[in-house]
Image (tube, rainbow, N blue to C red; front, side):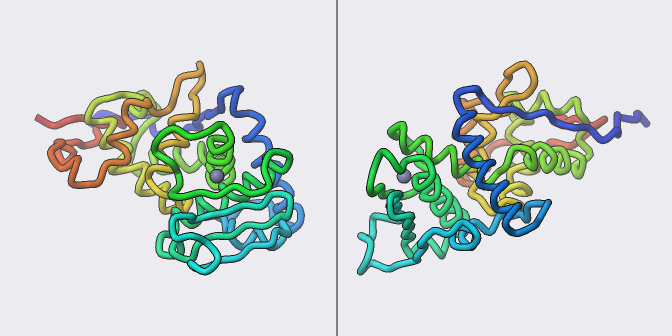
Length: 250
Ligand SMILES: [Zn+2]
């Protein structure tokens, strides 16, 4: 029997310099919450919808079609510290949570820019304006805090007997990479953080390993967000973990 390296390992994740301002804004909000609620550890998933009201002090309402057009799912009025979320989002926890965090991002980052900002389905898959990208980044940063994410990712890898050497497969582009993300990492982390698979995949696409290497290649995003039936042809069932790394059995 070959022994693989079972030593608990730490992952070092970082952000791009261009994202630092928004990341800092999100972590400042989390520090404020921790301080006001006298908690040291962040509960996961973060109860962002509760925190927007208390302790953050925003005027937050869940409303129906009489107050928001059915195609507007979230609305922020930064100068009034007001956030409205469409009640239809309550059916989807991940989208509800992301939209709440995105509107909070508008209130914190865009006070001087706009009186009112409205959003349809989030996170967006196509191109968006700089303001919308910032609010999306804020939502990702606050819902999936960087310091907790590295620890949680390493924990999931350990749960699957994956060693530090398998980190290289995270950023690969073959079937083992799809298996790692779709069968191990995304199901566990989406559950832990209460976010959609798309939101989690976009977060990892932006994060960097030491040496400024992306954790997840942008070219792999479509396979991360595809419905299960779209990846049914891939031989994911033939992948096993051997000596701490994923192996495709012949
Ligand atoms: Zn927006």
